[in-house]
Length: 99
Image (cartoon, rainbow, N blue to C red; front, side, top):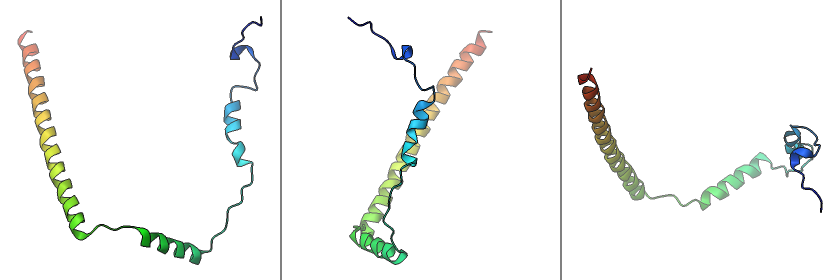
């Protein structure tokens, strides 16, 4: 039966070999299809036509919901902050009364 060896027992190329191996892809030459500026703009126009834009009513409804939720969260965090402030003041008054 062979004795088990750990990775530390094996000689390696060095502590930074993983870094040098990570950049092997930079050495390879890759070919990228060249696109002319006019062709690129035509592709952008075609993709923009595929976008489903929200109606003005949907935009208004979403904006109102954002304002309502922001207000509710503001009130919630104001209440939590007030509660914690009160607790800290009570604890400090207890600590100050014992000295």
